[in-house]
View (cartoon, one colour):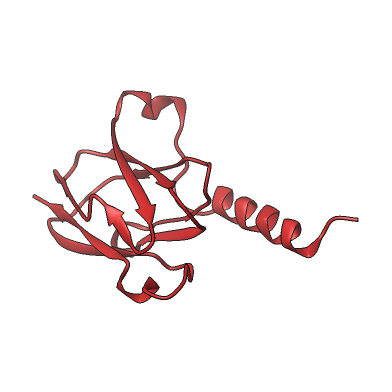
Length: 119
């Protein structure tokens, strides 16, 4: 019998595969921007992109389960320790857009945010 916690992890991983923008072989030539999630911040906290130039955000967690949500571009993922998440982001508008952790990761979670600046 599989413990309920393990089922939850499997369900979250499957949900992550179904949502967001998965990367493909065609995305291999895109610029990769590493992003590290840790209690209670993202590093870097500001990412600068160019309008019309898609990139891959490669997100890892150094400690606990986090979420990543950049709703302005439909980019959302669960970030599980020990795993890399690759999200394609294709900025189609200029401005400053907030991203945040949307998976409760402990006290301080509510301030875990950053921004994407698209020029």
